[in-house]
Amino acid sequence: MNPAATARRLKSPGEIRKYSTIYHDRLRSARGTRAVLSGLENLVLTGSPYPSGRNIANDEVIVLKDNFLTTDLPTTCASHILEGFRGSATSMVGRLLQDAGIHIVAKTNMDEFGMGSYSTNSARGPVKHGFDSLEQSVGGSSGGSALVVAGGLARFAIGSDTGGSVRLPAAYTGILGFKPSYGRISRNGLIPYANSLDTVGIMSTSVKDAISIYRILNKYDPADPTSLDLNSRARISHAGLSRSRVPDHEASNQVGVRVIGLRDKKESARLSLEAGMRWKAYGRQYLTKRSWRIGVPDEYNIQEMHPWIRIAWLKTLSVLQDMGNDIVHISLPTTQSALSAYYVLAPAEASSNLAKYDGVRYGIPRDAELADNHEGVLYAHHRGQHFGDEVKRRILLGTFSLSAGAMDNYFIQAQKVRRLVQQDFNNVFTVPHPLLEASTGNPEGVDFIVVPTAPTLPPLLSELKRQSPLDSYINDIFTVPASLAGLPAISVPVVADDDLPPTSDKNIGMQIIGQFGEDMPLLNFARDTVEAIDPPRPRETDSRIWTARRF
Image (cartoon, rainbow, N blue to C red; front, side, top):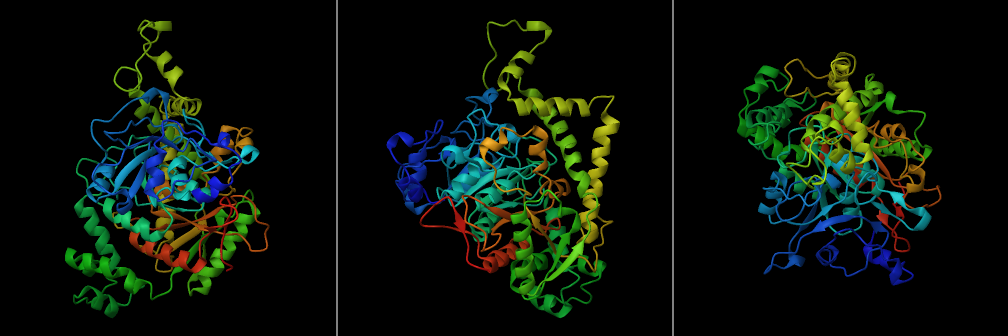
């Protein structure tokens, strides 16, 4: 979406959409345009003045989803219950970006506490783009961050991905959305929704930019108990040396060490950390010289998939095959149960995490006119008044699944399904899981899995009003499995067919999934894929329609 082209569509100044507590002047100047934005409602929640004495045109800027703590900007998670709250320290992600010379200029709108698939469950109103009756969802829950990048206001943005909250809005807005392996990027300072699932995600318009930000953030943080420690990162690096499909002599030349039997697990374990780091640096140079085995799971070919998305999937696989890759049918049988398990586990963790929002310690204060024991409860009135409907729904669902009578039948069973989902992925990948001793890898397996990011096209907001909560949950069916297994995944923009009529914002995302720890090989493969497909670009005549070169 081109802001200048969007501005030219305005009929009168009265059509200008007003954001809530915005600082859009800084965003516009950061990208070198003074265009008035329209059709991007409730995009930015708060903004920051640029530091004096620095030229914003020469520095990079970035925006954060509104669930990352910052000291100079409020952090509300798009909820009334945290209105006006400011963190006592900036999140680790924010500090690393600032240390790299990247200025955080704004906090973006989202689904309240990350709970939603369309960025409509916000106390500030839905994130949307389009005009009049054609107002469309941008996906969720990181919809504000996605739209900032799609609108050309920043080259990259940070979101959080619990069950697809970075990949889904990336697909709906025609940009890239990358979810790293769980634990790769510190969650310190990220307000949690579900601790075992939350992952910091990166949005950009190019894989090159995503790699640049990932390298800045891919650091061990001792303050985050879920951050991969140095030993785990070393094991992941060593695992790259034992790729069963890499010829021994070429790997030896790349890392500069004598390798007797690279396929032998014990021998590869003896390789030094230095060799592993050198392999990591040279990995792309060598690995892109060989073909990849691409997995296509039968379980993802569901009847409810939109025909255009099925066409785009087939054409993407055709392009990958023309690149010299092998397309392999695989089976991930537990996929059918993954969504149900996710919507037991995530709300259960959320009900615990959100228990602290009582009006005493955080956010908007309790009503002073009400007694502490109003209606026989201590703070239920405050929570009921300031939490949104979707948040209350998931708190109740999570509280029930953790209750004594339901724990064994729901929560424990969901944990078992989660382990089966992880085993399914380990059974089909060539590379073993580097942190699981029992994982050996499948010599006849695949390197990456390519599936659609979502089964639907970006819906109109008018259509969402007729959906039930269950209908919206189903939209996460393709993104949830990778989240349950903690695997890296990236959504890249593709097109369906050149013969289809051009319509507004018919964006389609294709998701590439890799084995745990294979983040850089995944990003490099995604870069090659995007270069081959040639992703959608804005038309000059209509900034809301993305087109692409013919395959």
